[in-house]
Image (cartoon, rainbow, N blue to C red; front, side, top):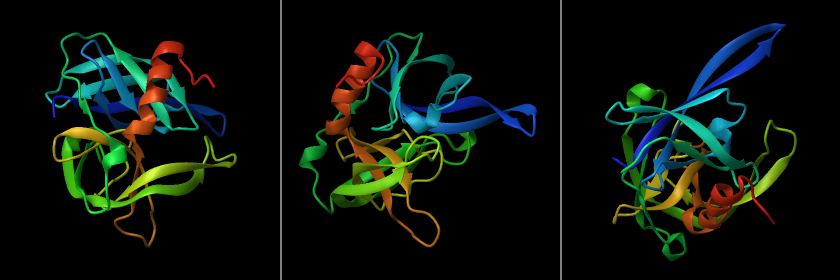
Length: 204
């Protein structure tokens, strides 16, 4: 749990000519000892400020290093040292039925550190989702899991039984559907995360 964080994002919106500030919560995890944090692009999209909150209550202002809408990945940086990085796993080795757990911040920061368990329900699922502000769609190749993933879990880790992150929780089917969540495979995400750290964007 020391490697997992809650993320609070403030955004400014204009409603009927009135500017208001709204807050949303998400999840993330520690990538390096010196403060690089991974989350989803859609968690921090349109941000005015980002706070990273550890489960012991320690809070940091975060800067956006880089984000990518197509992969729905983002990297943040906080001014910290001697953090506990999460261990990266091999999502290519996953099979249907493998047990996994999700850790995140569903509903609000008051429920930070919530753990849910389930299994891998499918691999290499092609899922079409809205892109950015809904102007068009994109197709993502994702892990499917029946692990409970709620709003606020986005950006948090999907872990195998060795405590290694194998996926980054990103979305679920809503309405009449139950137990259908999706995560970005970690093996696919590593290259993009490294690009974001190095260049601030995905370089093709």
